[in-house]
Image (cartoon, rainbow, N blue to C red; front, top):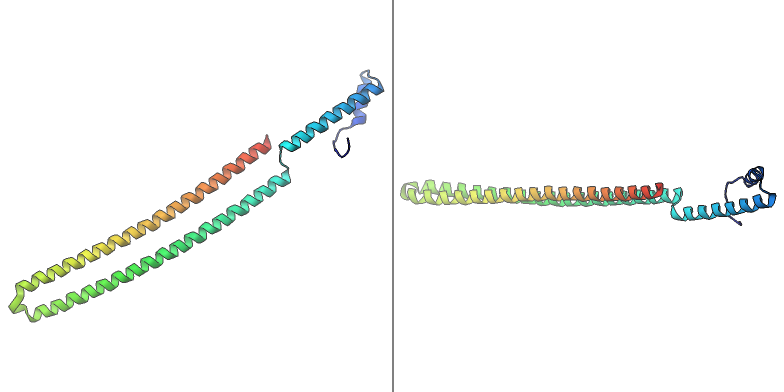
Length: 184
């Protein structure tokens, strides 16, 4: 039997066989065969299942991988959000600059119109209205761009959350599958 370890009381088993009427040689031979069968079955069962230590090690490795993945996703989200925030702030600053320029131009034209009001009142009203329309179009365009950027930020955030939840579900499913294999 060599290095095989099996917790069976072979002496007690032999005595039971002898009490039911077997000879010492028969009980020794039967006990030896039963012990051999039990050892082989134990080895086959051990080959089919993972040890508790190996399972715990695998679980710890997976938890470490998940933690690393969560950290990477979190960093990626933070970087992406910071980038989007900078872009939004830059666009907002540009919008304010354009608005200030437009206001300046409108004010400049209005002052000019007042000087020439008596001579070109009708023509200047048309020019001023055209400039206001242009300013409104620019404001509307900038508002649309700002809103689309905000929507893109939300969509990216939602997709990242879905991906993280999907990965966590996949790891949980794999862990439950492994646990189920171990329990059977």
